Image 1 (cartoon, rainbow, N blue to C red):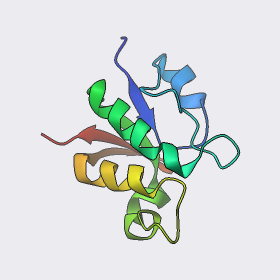
Image 2 (spheres, one colour; image 1 turned 60 degrees about the vertical axis):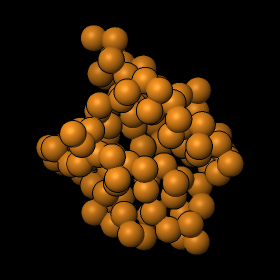
Image 3 (cartoon, rainbow, N blue to C red; image 1 turned 90 degrees about the vertical axis):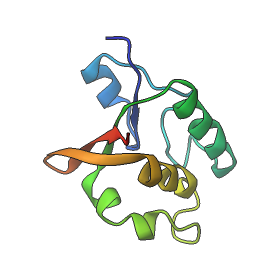
Length: 103
């Protein structure tokens, strides 16, 4: 309880369902609500709050080479590269992965 969780999906539903809060002011990474120049803020907040759990779509995680590419995904490529380097898939629920921080 009280531990923050990071969700790479474009919704606040998981925060509501898990009764957790996002580590950053920028909690919905959607084109209409987020700008690519704010990616470093999100990464710094994930580190500052020592986030240990994250949720991401299976398609994104399974295709990180594509989604982590600036040309293909300028909105969140830095965040996804950070997630790839610092988190690993722990469990799959349908089309989502629960990620845990690497030791």
